[in-house]
Amino acid sequence: MNVLIAGAGPTGLTLAIDLARRGVPVRVVDKAAEHFTGSRGDGLQPRTLEVFDDLGVIDTVLAQSLASPLISIHVDGAVVGERHFHTPTGPRPDRPYPDGRMLGQSRTEAILRDKLAEYGVRVELGTELLHFTQDADGVTATLATGEEVRADYLVGADGGHSTVRKALGIPFEGVTDESIRMLAGDVSAKELDHAKGHWFARADNPVEGVLLTPLSGGEQFQFAAPLVHDGVRPDLESLQAVLDAYAGPGAVTLHDLTWVTVWRSNVRLAQRFREGRVFLAGDSAHVHPPTGGQGLNTGVQDAYNLGWRLADGREEVLADYERERRTNALRVLGISTDLLRKHLDGDERALERGEDTRQLDVSYRDPADTSRVTTGDRAPDAPLTAPDGGTLRLFDLFRGPHETLLRFEPTTAARHPHTVDLFRAPGRDGYCAPLAFTYYDAADGTELLVRPDGYLG
Image (tube, rainbow, N blue to C red):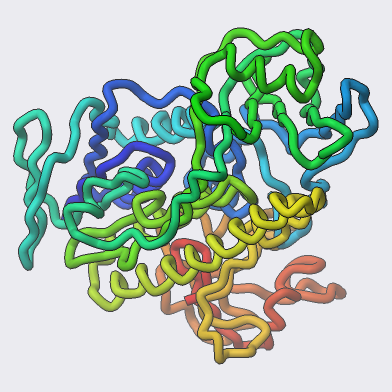
């Protein structure tokens, strides 16, 4: 079995790593001549960090990323206060990464490419997917290089203008609101403390302004501001003019612009995420407002959900991808759109209410099932006491491409190749360690199957 992935962004790379570590031959092609350089999707949510833990890149991600910074509030040129847009919550036994991290998208992609290379797979740049056909046994794709590729499955992770989605004729339902635009870029500003973010606004409208958020790996900030005039060119002069309008002329001098874009409010969802042997994931299936930082994260988790299904190959397993991930994408689009609406309505605290944006509460359970823990719920982490008295984490036992059977105080021999038997630690409340598995309310003799993507099966 082999898979062809169109698109080498975070979604395509995550999927390729997940397949490669399972021994599935995979190719990743991208029409771009060079790798993307820019911050764009720079927010990594807690659930995405858990995915990166499983894929073996979490240490590098944490080392290269930043915590959500404290923001200095500048109004009419004067600092009037400081606050967090997302208040840090600190780790819990079930949530080892409870707070998001800031890492420019190009740096995230570089980390994932390096990991993929460890499996002998490299992104094929300048290799556009031109067209394809499919039959009952596979997909035949033609690349811009003239090569004809035969694959068992094709995955379109090729962005909002997806060639794969358009070729399938799948409607991309939603709206593009040209009245809501943003000027964004990566730029340096010597006068500003790089250890903080900076919000510049005017007293007559303090919820509208320029946000400069520090980027890791240097002295640059990500610049973001509403674009209220037509005809503005995305260049350094335009960024400077917008900042001067809010901060005052000469207050901050911008320089070394390395990436810039005009973002338009685009909220869309593919009518279907699959047709036969062709699947959609990431922005090719859904595009989001930037509020809440959901786009990149939802795409990574699409890939994480799809990888083990493709490796399995059974139709009953493949069929649930669209049901689970399209339902989730619809929910997440609602969250990010609601946050955008509240922000535009002047709710300056809207972006702080971010529990839903962490994506730790994503569940694929049957809505009619009211059990505290059931099939489709995320399997939490927990501290354990090892038989030798040492400590380890439940995530350590889940890590890898396999599913895991958890058994609580079992009395029979293991029947699953990846079984974890849990026994009560003497004198402690819970299994094997304090707090472990109180989240499950598991009785003795209970068995729980944890899917390869960390959800109860």
